[in-house]
Length: 361
Image 1 (tube, rainbow, N blue to C red):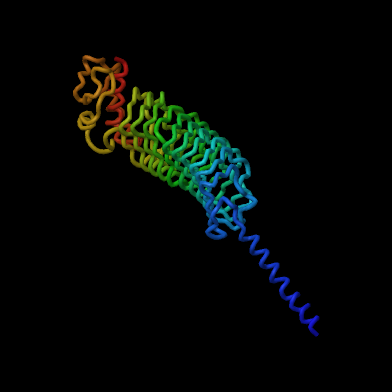
Image 2 (image 1 turned 45 degrees about the horizontal axis):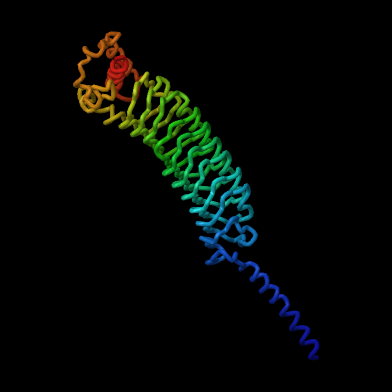
């Protein structure tokens, strides 16, 4: 009688003990970390040199690995953490991110890598993050963004690259990005390779400022389309070639303001480009008069006239236009009535004439 009772008790207790062991396994936490729960884990300032992947519960959703000693984020580094939604790697010694480093994170939405010595965003570094919405890469030492670095991140909404010494954007650097709300760049960009923005489709706000470019060519912004606000400002743009914006389409507001421009070879913007508002230099060209435009815009060359209002120039002492300006402007105005340009063509082309005369002094 007693033997049967004891046996029954053992049989009842055994699954209970197994359940407790299983719970203990699930509740395990890396010794360098603080597990606030099975979904939120802090591994900050723990001296980690590698991700403790095998010790992390697969249920983790928010993971902070800041201020450790990671130098390389290897391929598939976080594979298996299929519920992870937010990841912070700020303050590490990261100098290399291998291709497909974040593959295997189907639910990851937010990724932050800041305050690191990272110098290059390499090819396919963030490939495979099909559901990522925010990548913050500010305050690093990034000098260049390689081709297809963000390939496959089709749901990315926010990409921040500010406070980096970026000098070069490679061809197809942003290929694969569609429907981006905000794309933020640092100052100091000196090289934009052909087709750097090709494949970037639908951007709410794209701002490029404090660049130092030798020229803007047809290929500089080729493929850029469907932008709400496109702003180029406070930059040295060198020469704007006549075909510079030929391949830019569907821009709701296009601002080219407060830049240093050596010369404009032309700017062929037609109805087919579908530019809603073009603001050039100090104010919208669609409003105001030629005299107002000339009085509010200033010369950048020749040196002795630098900074003077355009309406103070003595054009006879500089050079006479090689063609009849009145006839040309009359022809331009006629073309404008046919919808050749979406902005006030008379004012814009008067600006070209002025720059042409200054250029050939």
